[in-house]
Image (tube, rainbow, N blue to C red; front, side, top):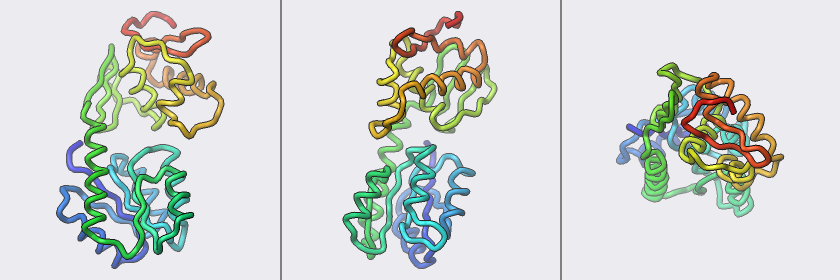
Length: 230
């Protein structure tokens, strides 16, 4: 994981300074965004942000819209910062995928403790730094996939899907199981969306590596070491 990167998003300079001070005793690298659009651009440019402190009320776009854009591609931990205690806002944030919620004025010590707890969770999830099978190597620290040492650009869901296949190599996985594990419990779409993602994933991996993902007819998929045609 290395030194985790924490993105602070707030359009008030004094609040960002307070949050930076709260995190000063945590071993982390801090990124700042003074508005929502800058936050989204910075997040996708940086790619390996470990935690986001996200203000709900901003002038150009509210924090819920930012959270939605990020959740379409990433499950990075997010702490929502609210201008006032509001149960409905808190519930809305959790329903959209927020990991924690803190209202202003907040205790810097409490904010630091919650941030540190979420960073520990990220570190634990990334303890398996490298996964490999056949010509495929997955570097979880860099969030990068290689085939025969050449980098392959995958979308967030394609990356998660590949990691899930590799971790469960040799096991026949139903589409429903894949949805539950990769798309999470709150996805209510057609399980056949898996087929579309697998097709794209195979294409990006190339013939040799892509053929490691076998089709289990009438059920789902299975990853094997044998690159024979699926």
